[in-house]
Image (cartoon, rainbow, N blue to C red; front, side):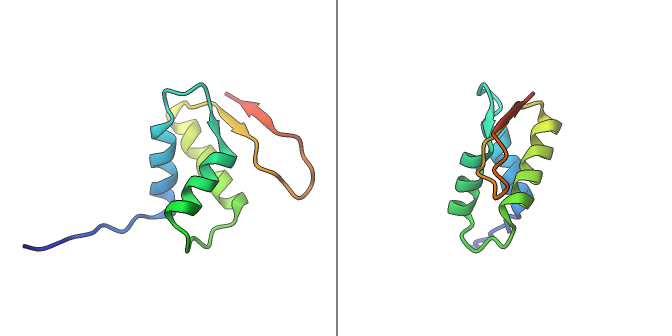
Length: 81
């Protein structure tokens, strides 16, 4: 018996998370980043890079996004659909 494991990329993890939230009212960027960092603790992507990946996947799949991650510049959270 051969065990084959597929490599999970950050892009695939982001898309999978978005798809898992497609029936929700919106996707929380803050929660998504925490989930990806839990799944992939060695992830080298910055929070900003993860935010961009999640936003792009959300747009592609028509999932509204809450940009609620804390930012260094103090920008208020925003909701986009």
